[in-house]
Image: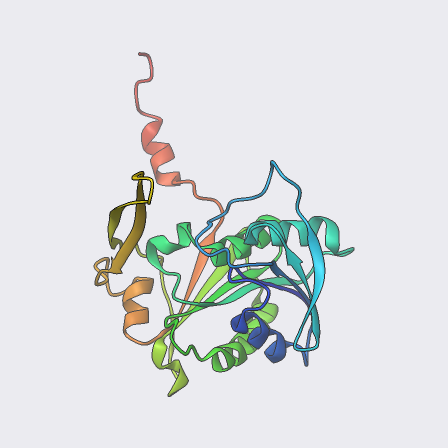
Amino acid sequence: MRIVLTNDDGIQSAGLWALYHALKPDHQLTVVAPERERSAVGHGITLHKPLRAHEVVVDGQVGWAVTGTPADCVKLTLVELLDDKPDMVISGINPGANVGVNLNYSGTVAAAKEGAIYGVPAMAVSIQSAQNPCFDEAARFVARLVTRVQDHGLPSGVFLNVNFPNLFCDRTAAVKIARQGCTLYDEFFEKRRDPRNRIYYWHGYETMPAHDGSDADAALLAAEYIVITPVRCDMTDYGMIEKMKSWDFNF
């Protein structure tokens, strides 16, 4: 298969190249990633300044470093850098889980979603711990998952969000297919003053216990499962459409 690899942690990220080495024996790979860390940029794209892309060599392997966001990387690759449509886009491996509301902020997830928008099967891959993450083991699982996606396919406009538990390094974890939860964070802003006495803020947060059901992604990841969530690009609430047809809009 022809697979595009990207991420939001930058072209030098160990998780990206773990995927590369796991997939290289059986697939034709194109690596296009941000030239620097672009975590938590969501699905932002670059409109008001030029994008630049240049080839870089990492551990003897060639990839493209792009000045834009993860979504920019995928869009540029599919529209301009490749002559033919790839068979899959894989984004990751991100050090840190992307579950619950994080899907709305994650550049890792946005890159996979951008692939799905263009009709390319895609997956976002993350691992729960940012401390000594076991990228190689996760990458080998992804290589096997690619085969399953190849066998079964994905509906148009659907991509997979894959999260590995911390203990995946130490033992085999079972797989659970889960819904996206809505677990929030205990967020705060630390107010400070700069040397010129101007106020600025540092955003901080602490993870709260999963509270949205034992079948949701965050709860199952906390229970040490490999969690796979099929995600739709279409965010329409179809049930609400029917309810709103009865509303009176003559105001």
